[in-house]
Amino acid sequence: MSSLVVDLRPLDLITLDDFWDAVAEPCGLPDWFGRNLDAWWDTIETRDISPVIDAYEDLVVRATPTGLFAPGNPDGTRLVGVFAEATRARLDLEP
Image (cartoon, rainbow, N blue to C red):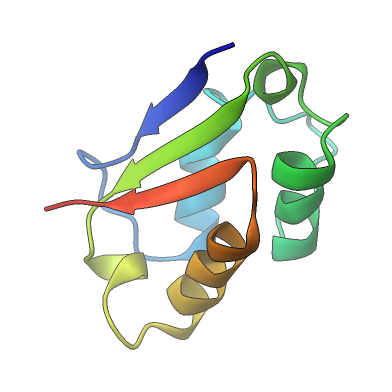
């Protein structure tokens, strides 16, 4: 199986809502997706929420270390932590 790669680098992500808006379509998130870190964990790790993500071995999200992912942003830090604990998803922060 291959990886689902979602490249968010061209986007200006400032808030978690920006992140949810950006990943909703490419990750096939259902309308009822909770848009919170617990729901994201269930989607990327437990699975059975998004058939798009489930069709791949793992998920790779690429983003820049600015805005939401800038050092010291508490929401970004928590989201980075979710990715760090996941075994089937990773976040690549690239300039």
